[in-house]
Length: 211
Ligand code: AMP
Image (cartoon, rainbow, N blue to C red; front, top):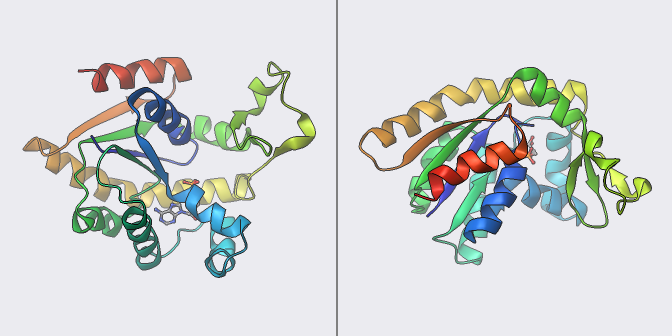
């Protein structure tokens, strides 16, 4: 079983990816995390891409496809993987077929524009654990020390709006591509309403994957 989580920035792909990974023992490949890791380690690649990421634009297709191919080969990944944040363009979607990854499920996660913005602006990362929280839930978590919380550099209103705009520009072609594939049952395509609580979304995804 290989899964693609597709959806706008802030829709909750990362949160749902962790849930699916834990419940179904699936490895998450998050291109955003791979890229941020390069930036944090200050590698040549990290230096090259940090401005692009911080400005909310996409890394060019040729480069991101090369990065993901290398990652998949290096870790010998073929099955039981979940793609979070890839593909983001139709060229990237085509590249998955070329890599030879067999996609079983595509989940299109959907939420209202306001919800996306609120989730992006409220996102806080606990730098000691790497875990992500929404600011409104942090007060309940006593173990988290507030001075360890960080905000992603691209989680500001201007960049968030730009990221959502870029997503909307590319969305249709990708969705059409996978809907077409789902007609002859090559993949299963499901829309998931993410204007709900995390638990409700978890349950709706489970209903599909448990079959
Ligand atoms: P994310 O953590 O998924 O929100 O990704 C953060 C940023 O990493 C994006 O805004 C892009 O700049 C870059 N990025 C992540 N995945 C991709 C991708 N598939 N194609 C191009 N850029 C990407």
